[in-house]
Image 1 (cartoon, rainbow, N blue to C red):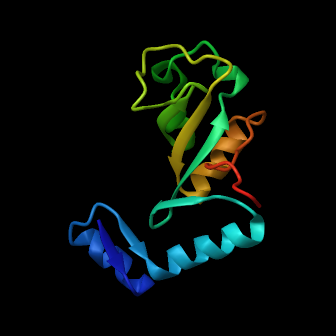
Image 2: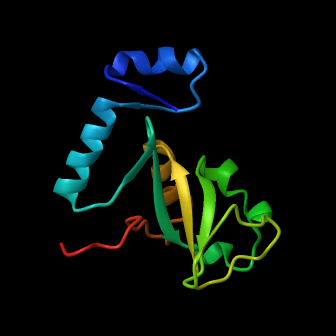
Length: 132
C-alpha cells in the first residue's frame, strides 16, 4: 500500500511493486464527490471503489461461480450482506438468496458495466446515511 502526492506518480509506484496506491487527488475528488452527490463512495485504491447492490434477480439461486459476475462486469464480489451480517470472501458454490446484497469492488467503468449487464440492479451507497 502506498500514497502519492502527485497523480503522475501513481503508475510509477505500481510498476515499482505497490499493490495499491492512493493519490491526494483521488482521495480529495472522492470526498468532494461524496459531499455534492450525497453519496458514500469508499475509495479502496486509486480508481477502485466499493459499492453495494441488491442481488440482481437474474442471479438469485445461482452461485457466484455460475454467475461469472467478475468476467461479465470486471467487478469483484468481496462480500455478501445477509442482513444478519456481512460475510466476506463468500463461498462461490453457495446459491445467492434473493434478500441479500452484494458488496463489490470496481473501477468506474466496471460499475457502469455492472449497471449495463444487470439493468434491474440498483447500486446503493456503501454506508447508511448518518444524520444527513
